[in-house]
Length: 339
Image (cartoon, rainbow, N blue to C red; front, side, top):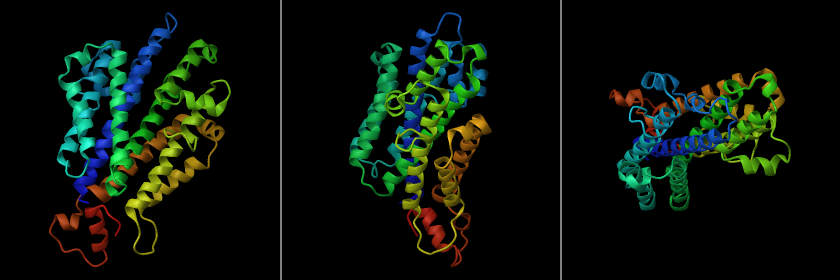
């Protein structure tokens, strides 16, 4: 597989996952705004913090309110991470590799793209129905991918992009609640506090599974533990890291024995760290700091994946003849296949 193909597959799924997460965040916040007690803070600006685009939003909408937040996250042309732009970028990547992906995958992403771009009837719907249809369109793309794409390197890179984006968004929305939305002492355990935790679980699509798993009241530690450390919930950080590690082992392979490289080391250390820790230890050491460190590790992991599989090695790019020690690694980087 060419590195440009692997790059496109990876980003198609990152963009679709990002669009689905943003639609879920906005959809839940729309409902939460209706339930918030009079005089309480509306759950809008924290969405910008969760997306990591506060500086851009403030520059575009200095006096932004709920309408501007939704516009920025859903349709704003100047926001590269808006839902419409994410689907557009995913569709463009898919267009470039139509001979690699299945016809069903292309038809689904292309249909979703044109619906968002040209369907006036779609945007005439109530906001909740718009967001629900976007979320279902993204989920349908996942289902079509898993049902029609062979479990070769194409599928592995598709899954890799989806998992990294999912882990990142789960940590971001949890961090917003714990660090930015933490209520005053008298509000802890109150109606608004419980409402925010329920909304957080729904934002991650985790409310029903949390209820089945925990069988207890919605407490901050229990929610954080479920979203970060649960081994079987598919949107938890631990689950994503386990699948990321599995995928990298399949993609990387090893022809010769030897010490693990930086990518293998980081993937393994992240998995070990988040598989063998307890929520009490994370909270005692500062949950915000732990999540911030995890987000940094995910960014580093992405950078290592990009450098190893998506770009041409410097020696080959400059026309130099690779030596015998590096030729095997270089072919791996170019082909995105085990050496």
